[in-house]
Image 1 (cartoon, helix red, strand yellow):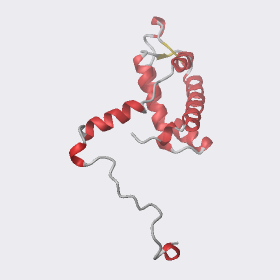
Image 2: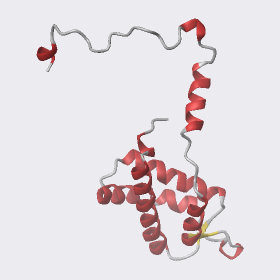
Image 3: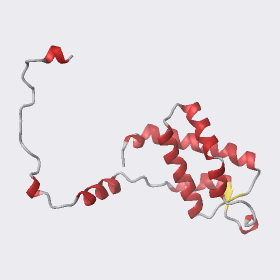
Length: 143
């Protein structure tokens, strides 16, 4: 392809600068903080209901394993199965899974049913939410 275009003039010959160095008034950190807040993922409230369907914050389950510990213990298996089943890159799956773990901790959830049932429902939730993220295009945004 390079041989085909060799010797031809570029179509875009404009050399104007968007901002010259002295005109830039913000730091690189501020720039990335603005970008990150612009594209920040907000955990929708209805997903809390999905987590509460699998886990519980009721006092009667206080002696049970925390949802955070449980989710971490099955993380590798869940991500592998969801990745194999969906073909989605592990990075996107891991991002969704980490959000699930973080939110489960914030809600102080604990395992309330059997481990096998909780694992199965976690995989289903992870699959659905991963596909939602992929179809929204959010996974393409590098933060």
